[in-house]
Amino acid sequence: MATHMVNMDALIPRDDFEAASDEPVTQASILSTTMKITDLGPDSLIYNVLRKPDFQRETANWTPEKVAELVRSFLEGDLIPSVILWRSPVSGNIFVIDGAHRLSALIAWVHDDYGDKYTSIRFFDNNIPDEQKRAATETRRLISESVGSYSELNLALRNSDTASRDRIRLARNLSAFAINLQWVGGGAEKAESSFFRINQQATPIDPTELDMIKSRRKPNALATRAFIRAGTGHKYWSTFSDVIQTEIEGTAKEVYDLIFKPNLDSSVRTADLPVAGRAYSADSVKMVFELVNFVNGLQPEMWRDEPTKKKRRLGGKPPITPLADDLDGTATLKFMRSVRKAASRIAGNEPASLGMHPAVYFYSATGRFQPAAFLSAVTLVQDLVDRRGLPGFTEVRVNFENFLVNYKYFLNQIVRAYGSLQKSTPIISLMYQTILAALHDNCTDEQIIERLKAQSALRSPIKVQSDEDRKSRRNFSAETKNAAALRATIAAAPRCEICGAFLHLRFATVDHKVRKQDGGTGDISNAQLTHPYCNSGYKESKNAAKPK
Image (cartoon, rainbow, N blue to C red):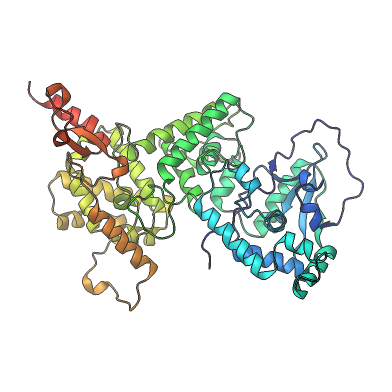
């Protein structure tokens, strides 16, 4: 069973319900009740006016098996729920209110584009993750084995002497069967309310997706959309000036490459792990949205439209200022620059980067990426920066990381007890702060664990494992294999020659042991690998503190 979803998001373009056309449009008196498969070809008049609402969630939630099953069901004449459409009286475009995945699966079959061919390549600016390509290849294989490609069935009736009987039968069905249509009447407001009502009754929209849909013109949602696809896909920022658009897309790609590269498969097979896991995953959008909001100091009350509630703070705190829609892109860019600055502090080669080793900080004991751990690391570094605590952290960093590695399963226990993302982030952050405070007091591992258990939020989930706690199996599970690979990665990792903590070579800098201004040469004997921050901020602060 494939683990990756088929990305068909490029096949039906998005548009604003109320976007106007240059041509005068009249309301149709009769709307068709069916749509033939030939209406979905790239040259079809209907296909070229087909649209999704600009707030529609990504059409990427079906497995290869489900796409192949839908195509097979259609060709066999099985009952497929009607697709619900709305025709804009302003633009004349036809919007899919319900059934985008069903319709996209058939379009993908007709175009032979399951997220990896011409339309998708152009839509994603050729930035297609390996997981997306693999899902497309698997879908194409299943389709070929099950019913054959659209082009094959198209030729079957013309070449009946060489085509199989089953293919000829399916080709005849193809010529006769059609998709049933239902239509929503009224204006754009009625179409939007119908979309939310219908989609919430079927598969409820995830709360984060719903937040982003309803705040789609606000800078936090726009920034998230840009980051998650490296500035490609649907251009939610297309109304901004060309200069703003260029910077949005450039910043998005820079951050994407920093946190999501190299691409990660479902198993750990390399020491070069991305700091933020897989971009092509169910949790990635939620995590990036949380990242944008945290870095920019946003609370849900600021972007959620809740007119019945007064946006005020208790305890004499100032009232919350609602987040306005971004009309020109400047607010979106401001948010994106803040995220870039925060991301570059935990990864990359800039002088302020701590170069955190992904295997140490962001992956659990079972070898799985933990979004909550990533967000907690960002929280930790932001707090250190605010308190000017980076030098103090560097002093104990090696012991801090050694503790995290020795008790990596604490992370699994917290996430299991509290849940992922924002549910566990405050608890993991509390654990980090407690460990650091204990290390500054020269505590042993046993004393650190006692301090952790003294915290009410950590007392229940944290349990030290004994050898008897570890169950043995005859065969290794995928998690065991990942854990073994992660353990080997950490064991083989080099150490920063200034602070002694784990060093990720992708984020390493080459430092002069004896500074150039003190007569140090460029010979290999004077070179050492360090974290960027250790090489710049920390080393300089230590040198400045030395007596003259």
